[in-house]
Length: 423
Length: 177
Picture 1 (cartoon, each protein chain N blue to C red):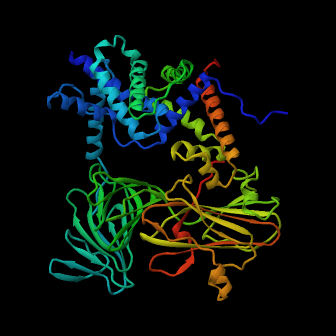
Picture 2 (cartoon, rainbow over the protein chains, first blue to last red):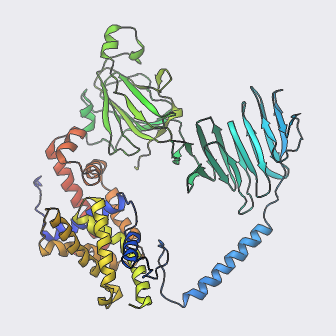
């Protein structure tokens, strides 16, 4: 029988272990600035501002001291520039913007001081403002170029310029764009009150409110600049990002549901009966995706399930969470997208009806398991998981939240993205 | 000092910066203090660059300076530490092995090996390690958060350390001392 007692570590092994831990800390940990740059600054100050070190600007790439490589690199760079110029010169044809579809009488075009009726085939000029109005819709096409911009109702889009690529300003509403390959250095740019989306060829949706811009990318990638930021966030396929005055853009997987993991034949009716089981967390019997944070009722024994993923708050503010379940259950939330900091925020006793927080029973109201108020920030995602363990009773699990300014409701898939297990 | 030597210093310093921070973070857990020590180390290294005869020995040379700076900084804060020579040799073994790894020239990529070993840990061990090493949580606090016993936390940490050490040794083909 192997002993459970720890095997003493030798000093040499301890040294190796300490080194590995240091590497891990540095690899995963916070790196506020470059120690080399700071050291160089200090050396410069010590020299009375005189540049005593002939350092080039810090760079991540290794500079080779072999001078024989320099001519080859210069030649390669020259060829790359020529290829790029050629690509530009012989690049894709750029079309002119034309109204390809108009739905509803409210669609209008403001041109200078005039309002022109929108009609299919009308060519848009720089500074034109296209408005779809209530229940209206419109599509802008670009001749032979297979680029289209579909405007939903209540959308306002201004064609700012065509001189250095397509430039639009969108004040409000929603558009869906399928952008074919644009000329190098001439991306299509859509500016909003909070951000700017730059694309050379992709498919995306942009939704703008007075406070927030949301970008969803379904193909390719988009450079997303928040107004005033010095660098963009690259939002890739099947990701989205928000931008607002107090909302820093962050590329996150597209929302739509949460992962459910099911374990069977695990006895016991306590949450810890699952957490301590050797099959938890890596060996569930089954996994599937749910479109909201709730499961159907299942009549079974020795059953456990976990709903795990991320919540995407639509607005910044104080949120409250509720949980209900057939078996015992618990809800954890992390202050960020990492599971490390997760905290148990609510627990529920078993044997209660679905969504019992909506019941009129005074007893239910008093026993209603809910979280304290938790401040969440729009544009970020937060790790969340709920676990239910049922011994013999009916199993079901629901989690609701109250978004600031809205009614309490089960968290819908619109605000959820699933956790991706490694195995 | 001639400009060519200074130029080499810049290249070497940038190349070895991730290694330097990792080495210092092996000895101190506070990232801000680690960065301060890294800066001091680089300033001293620059001032002593003329004493470095072999640029290929820059890594061990820099670690030697860093080690002294760590001990000095901790002493100033009343936190003296002393390591057996064998512990320091064990640390050097890991960094030397990574320095000998010719697959890549960048330290961050070399550290990928360690990260892969870390990420390969079973979820339970990974979770405890993250809380302990990156969030600086005490074992007792981790036990409370995860609702498991203190002994279980300590056991998981020990198993994680063994697993990482064995995995890194295997990846680097280091011989057991």
